[in-house]
Length: 376
Image 1: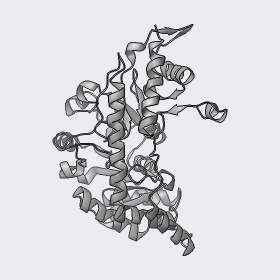
Image 2: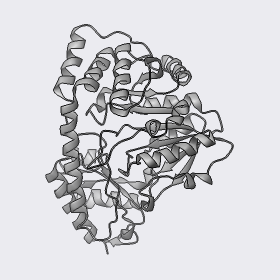
Image 3: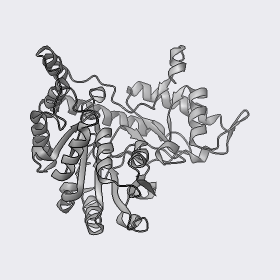
Image 4: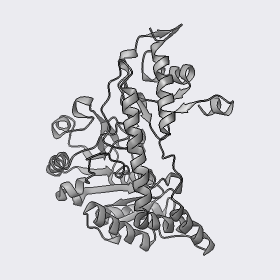
């Protein structure tokens, strides 16, 4: 796609995984002022105390969760928080359950910790959500943890409080640790309410590592601030690990993140409202394409249609055998970039992101529809 755009080809991208908004001006102003004030030196491995206090207050205010500053670690993005958590809790040969579809990094991060990813496939019949019954046959005496992501990249689905409560009770009974990736928590639509599994089932708190950050909800992907909240002994070990890994993220970034967590509610609401409008637009135009099946997203900025009805069809000499073939065909023939579901453990699907304008969405789907009509 980059090469095509660089050569002047007009490509509409549904592949991007970050907000298209600029970071709110108030947040940027604090970051700039912090640089001017000389906040450019090393920071503590766990993060600045002021930022950890702001995270504690945010968790209490927005999630009804009580932590203290020593149960928080600031990392270079939420992805690193997950990686560090796995490095601390997983030993060689331990199994980590990953519901599929999943974010592409999860299995590889488990492998980097010398663990074994155990994939539990879900379907649209359960809105791509895992249940205790689905987990039962996959749990062994080597099962150490499960990675949950809700709202989910790539499906856009999330769990209700009741579903999380039942899942939490089951995982407590089995003694399985939880890595709860809630980075998309602010991106929920309509009457959907984000609930952390720790709030839904307080019994899981002692073995849950909650992951979050500012990248998705605050349009701060490049600032690279994520965090983990969890049991003090785990956070302490993660802090020691980070100290040998990156030390700490820049102070001016952390100061800007305090501003994001405490004073940017109106900016966040504006962006989330726009994503909800775009989601409705995407659903409306996708519904006009025969052969596509999809769940309406609860949140995120992704939709995950099943495109398998187009497998086996041809255009000229090219046969579409899988999602990767279809994604390559759409890029070449329609000048529309998508993501193959194969990479997310969701064969037969494409991930479409709606982080572009309503007009861009409509034009992109028109192109996609015309290209699909050519397949016979």
